[in-house]
Image (cartoon, rainbow, N blue to C red; front, side, top):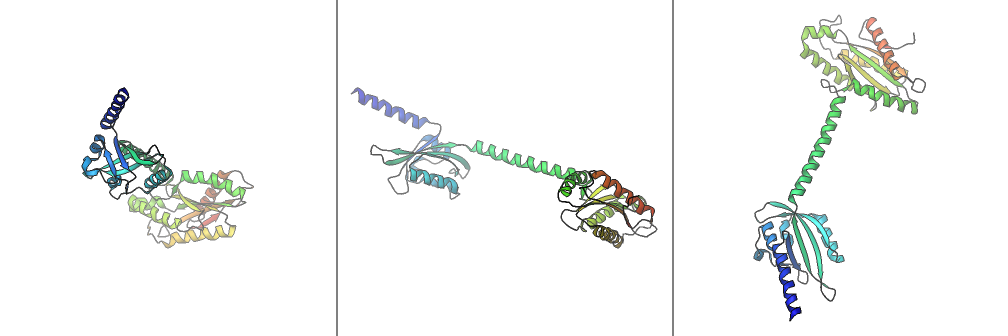
Length: 321
């Protein structure tokens, strides 16, 4: 009789454990079609809002309400085919329609003959964890995009939307190395708007800003190729960096730029020319033979000074003195 009494105690203990467990516990019968639930504990009914009689006889998938995670379903199917336990996290719906995230552990129950008769399901509400992870992921994404935005802002001139001097100087170092490896020329064009102080004094800073934006846009649209770019160097000065131009191309390009700005026909009574124009100086270097990228900027600056002295509204190439 003692053995029987022991078995009774064990049965009682098991029932107490299942009944009072904090996690949801379900048992489904896989000998019947669609693997229906045959048992749920109190924690499951608290977690889902469904009473036992509402769910017994149903397949547990009703909790997904058609909002199916295909990879989790696939994991369960594979586990059932291979008779292995599995762990998945499912988006489930309580009876009142609210969502909770259910970490489901499924374990096959095997009888004396080695056949699977039932599945034991342990359900954990991991909503807080999932929401925390999502929040962290979103915050990380936000931090990353903020970082990218800051990097962008650090390299962009706010008024014109062009790259700024800092970006140009960083790029010049990079492009110089690339050009020396691929035996390419680098051309620097330095551009200055003629009589711009007088323009601001006459028409005001708002008109001045508008003129800067228009000129920036025009210069930006005159690119030869993707590797060329224009930067606002400061005030009314712009710089263009171009890779692989011949002397003839640089001459034609610079002449075209001066002409394009003149063609904008921005009225300027403070200029002897009657409208806004630019002066441009440029210098070319082959980084294979020159190791000083700052020198090419200085030379372009000198050529710009010559363009100013010679009467403005023109392009001048740097020539060795």
